[in-house]
Length: 217
Ligand code: ADP
Ligand code: 5GP
Image 1: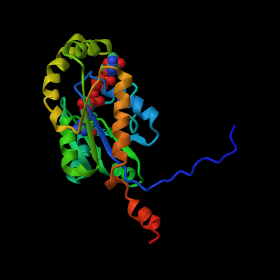
Image 2 (image 1 turned 120 degrees about the vertical axis):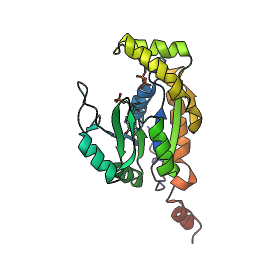
Image 3 (image 1 turned 30 degrees about the vertical axis):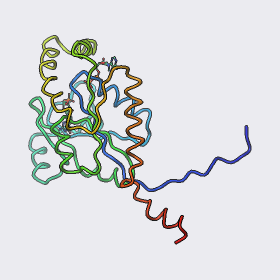
Image 4 (image 1 turned 60 degrees about the horizontal axis):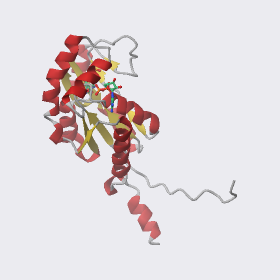
């Protein structure tokens, strides 16, 4: 072991970013998101509100904030959502307050929203948004992954395959596109995007003071 002290670690105050991952169902978005949350302590998941009933094992306040239609409508009327949309017959929305608190504290927030939600985030928070679209390597592989996930019936898989084409038509609205072929490579690509986006000048809000001091002003 060396006696030399650790090199000094310079921290510049930074505003957090909003990372959106979208994909057709089965392309691997959930798998990649879980890996990122484990690997990266600076990233937290945004918890959406929804009117859909909880699935077995889902915890209120952790997986979703489960709301009645009336409570959801009240939040819409009070402009408490950064975005909201109807997906597969249920309503989903991103509460604004926790996201703004996290960004101001320099934490990055990961979102699982569909293309409609991403369009609204782009309108409402473009400067904070980094969006990635995950594509499957082929049509057949997407179908295979939907089957291997094994939770869904044949009918659900057919339904998701028919919706995949419509979802994939939105690929060009995203900042980055990743074809999720080899999982580890895809995770590394998202980490590389995150590392570069964190260094953007506009996000390093402590830079003016830092450079001011460097220049001895
Ligand atoms: P999504 O969240 O996009 O619906 P999932 O993350 O649930 O998709 O992935 C669907 C299935 O495909 C899961 O069984 C997952 O383990 C598998 N999978 C994800 N990425 C890959 C990959 N790169 N190679 C092979 N299988 C994958
Ligand atoms: P699920 O009900 O299976 O958890 O999610 C269904 C769909 O709703 C997914 O495509 C997911 O991306 C989308 N979704 C989840 N939360 C939100 C949200 O807050 N806003 C929007 N626009 N979509 C969401």
